[in-house]
Length: 498
Image 1 (spheres, rainbow, N blue to C red):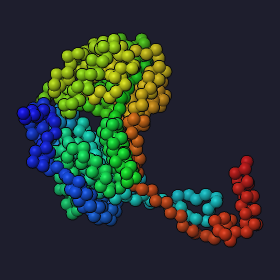
Image 2 (image 1 turned 180 degrees about the horizontal axis):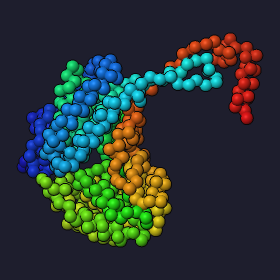
Image 3 (image 1 turned 30 degrees about the vertical axis):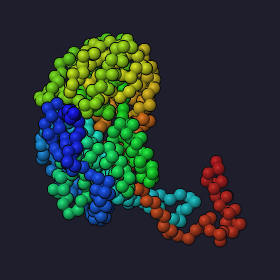
Image 4 (image 1 turned 45 degrees about the horizontal axis):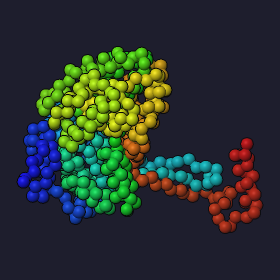
């Protein structure tokens, strides 16, 4: 009996990866599946191209990256439509994603010289006769394993910064959005056609594993925590360094002096944008006693107005069909444990869609609170004060982003969150801030993309010392005398002993 293909599920036919829309089943693309030999060949070509790319120097790379940025900007609608067709994301949301990615390409291109350029570093007393020099050198070839939920913005956070730092890149897009990944590669080749500096390999998880073992100089991965562990294990075999941006269970804290209308707007956007399929999405809210009821009412009023469907709606389908059962399990568990649905609920999952769902009074040990849901759901729980809210927020091993709404204490509360990022009186805004690093702690991963730290993530620091004078206090030589050692001890005590 022939199995029925579920729209949106990756399918391999005649050696090609078939990508379809999860709501309509419309074909988005067919890409050749890479064998292990194909992956090795792609990395070998990238290795050869990396020498040419690094040899362009910063100015040459900047000029080409800015041309790519211009190409992306001029074709925003085209790329957004492909994101919609392939993954089901509403076009307006896809436009926002592409626009944010364009900003990151621009920042990486314009700031690589300032951040990574060679510089003199001040010497210290013990080696005052030496000059100190620091520069950043590209790794060579970076393997990027991208996600399906933000198939433009997220991989470009690694791709653009790696390219700006002088590396070649081999991208393994998600098997759910390979056409978008190939579009990025093809658009780059239109402006950098001399060498295969940026290429892609397609397939299922085994292709990603092959990329980890292919001899790339570093791997940048975005995906689930479970898959991140597999990537680390594969890379550990060859001591290939990795950057892991894994899952999240981000929380919002609403204090007593918060603007409740603004907080509710941000909670609905932060939790339900992209059908909740956002690693930094707001999945938990802790509202302080006294504002809880008013906040919940405002959230429900906003969320119940959202439309769900394939085209022209606020919320599209769940891109990965298997995630529907995860979302259903989380909602059912929350209700079974005494939680209440003030919007949506037990019948919210209607494949391939999930209706906006707001759950309150959900026990902290439920899976809806402790595990990543990745759907258009929010849990909102009442707390005595912000101290309890911080404790609950920090109780999980995840630590990606977070949000705090309030006036007097909001900044101090944000600083207490065990997370790589936080927003005050907004949600998710740190992702679009190209000047800031992006990444998590704990089960949310390590390493950073974006900003100066993102550029340095794709370059090796190279330290050089150069003698500029005779040593007045010879220490690093067997020609030193007892008198030299005595003078050294005396000088150190004089400078550091008080």
